[in-house]
Image (cartoon, rainbow, N blue to C red; front, side, top):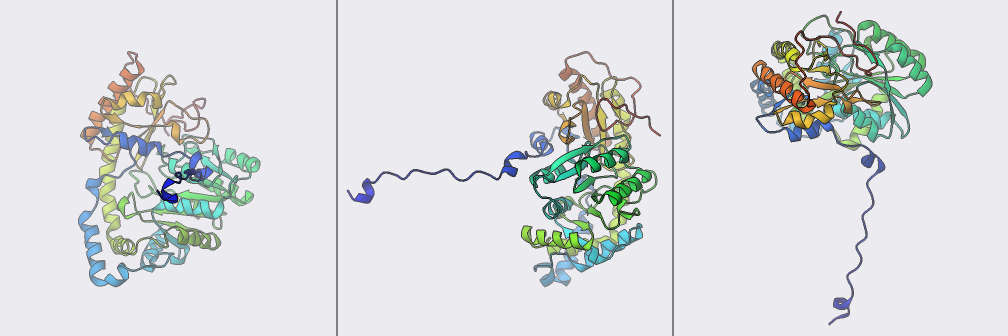
Length: 432
């Protein structure tokens, strides 16, 4: 036997550990719920997905065919990190027409607006920096800031959104790098920040020297009322506001197309961060989206009509589904409705039993950066038909009653009050 054959097997050393940020930030509870409720018989109010039957398959396919027929070499080649000039120009024109003067060079095309958050976290945040957020807050933003090592602090608010006075107090005390907000049809609450509060937020940022990250994925999905101007257009916000947008909710999320409008120095830093991440967003998708822009408004108008009907169907059925003492809001757009059950209900603990009734929601607790309100839930109304919404709410009511283990009766009148979005100690305000 050779020396090599007789030698003992070398000891296997353990591989190095994961980065601390990877170990400290968990996955998305919403994604986990979607994986558990993927059965076709489940009526799913948990996801934030647009209705797939409303995708303009023919229009989008025609845009891709035209691009590949007319400019195949360009469509299939590498592109600039900043994005295709035609798409940036088209987007700049749409934003300027809506009251925010924008040039193509003000924009960076991103692989979904979620990448915009990641790029901003890379460009702005060092470990230990403080970020202020709404309470509750878009869950994936909490993940992005957490992975950057930021300290996330929630700003109190009410049914109308963040309280500018509380924001000013926290800015003075915490010295944050940025304030993140979804002011229009917010995820998860569906609420919209009024114009006067937007102006006040801009004033706070101007006085205190804070970045505002204004995320607007749902703004075009308005079902009633007048459009509220972007914070980015408010006096004092011009040089310190980043505006994020997306085609995911109005065209198709599978295209993974978003954009970032930011002052020049920050935009250049995001370009460098994007070069390290993915070089550029897929060229063919950008060119097809630029071609499709001319028909986008007509498509969005059709989507809005369908989603409005679905929102109304959910509002009509909540009184019989939720227990007495529940409150909920009436969103004027977007995809989500926010409900608060009586304080004795823990929607996280109740969810497994409710899912056994073949219906699902998202518990409110994961959306809170601070102490959660465990009696809250998010309901998405856009993916199901009115008929399925009615059936889903019936199942939800049955599931909640059985899960709670009491003979709780449905609320006969249905309290349609906007829920306070901060803590159970704040009272809900009646609809205006």
